[in-house]
Amino acid sequence: MQDFTLRQLEYLLAAVDEGSVAGAAARLNVSQPTISVALAKMEAQLGVQLLLRQHAQGVTPTASARAILPAARSLLAHAGELGRAARDAGAGLAGELTIGAVSTLAPLVLPALIARLGRDYPELRLAVRDGSQAAMLAALEAGAVDMVLLYDIDLPESVAARVLAAPQPYALLPEGHRLAGQAEVRLRDLAAEPLILLDMPPSRDWFLGLFRAAGVEADVAHTSPSMELVRGMVGQGLGYSVLVTRPRHDRTYDGRRVVARPLSDSPTAGRVVIGHLRGHRQTRLMQVFAEAAAAHFAQEA
Image (cartoon, rainbow, N blue to C red; front, side, top):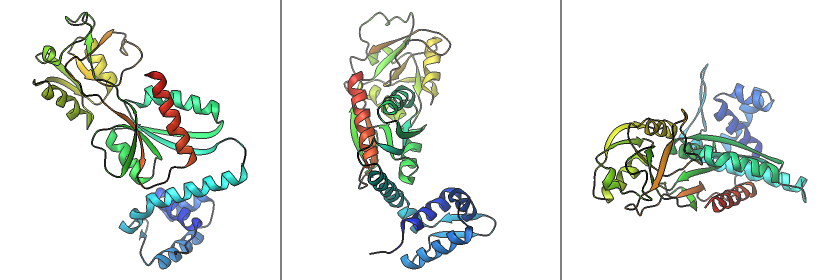
């Protein structure tokens, strides 16, 4: 059994996150020599070099350090939870949790979850990050976020995912479109028109795959990674789009009305999932958030 300490792990993570021993010392309010000695001792105990020390350029983690960073973050999180549980036995849930979400989901889901959990657990602090699916997966692997809200598209084996919802894709049409009055539309009836494509990997290939499955090819006129920009171009009559995430309103940022219609020839549903690193035990905070997310989607179904 290795005899390094939680304090040494804390020093290591701080040095990596801050990019220098000086930054870690300032963040943790301890002296630089204290951190340097502790890290040198940890390297001797493990028999590997953890940090590359470059004069005037700070420190960078070695491959050995990068291999243990996610587990180290998880271990410190569990240690913190154990301490809180011992101090606050019988009291409400407390602590900090960082959630990452793909940017098309974040504004639709996270505000309600933050508000709900804030009411139920006043001592729980939720930090959020949003971005592309690739960015959120990278943040999860690096330990920068504890859990992620994503689409179940090309997820790596390292992510354990729980399905929260399976929304159906729909066509977004400008007001007055020739098909806007129909209850459902078909991709084959839209394929010859200009498509405004949500261009955020891996969603791009997933959307284009819907057309191929329907036996047609899309005529891509414009692309954007921003769902609101896509909606705005549809509202201006520049084309139609196919989306999965559906806002609660039918107006674009500039006030134009758009019309959402189900696709009758697209049986494939998208899957929204909440994920964490496989093999890392979920903390109570993570379990509570996952249950709240599941309840939110069930209520919205």
